[in-house]
Length: 112
Image 1 (cartoon, one colour):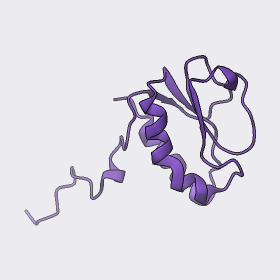
Image 2 (image 1 turned 60 degrees about the vertical axis):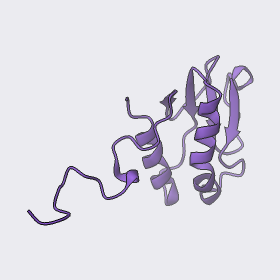
Image 3 (image 1 turned 90 degrees about the vertical axis):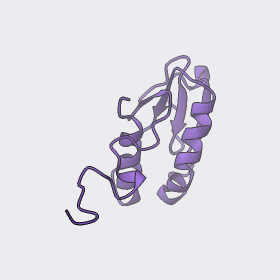
């Protein structure tokens, strides 16, 4: 068998089915925030229930995908450290860098 031919081993951690999966459940494309959930926001919109959120962090208040990508993992870790019931994530546009952000969020939301 050739070295590196083992298809069961990912080439990098970001290729795992579950990459940086927080302890809290992750709810994608949230349209509201349930009591006890933390909110990972994106853009200027305010979701119903945000005032009851356990914590709120906005990847980019201006809706900038570069800023959102830079903040993604640090903000997820910070929200998870607050031990929320779940982390609600606002929709991120599926264009340009948003595709990669959404890929990482889907991996973070994979059931463990």
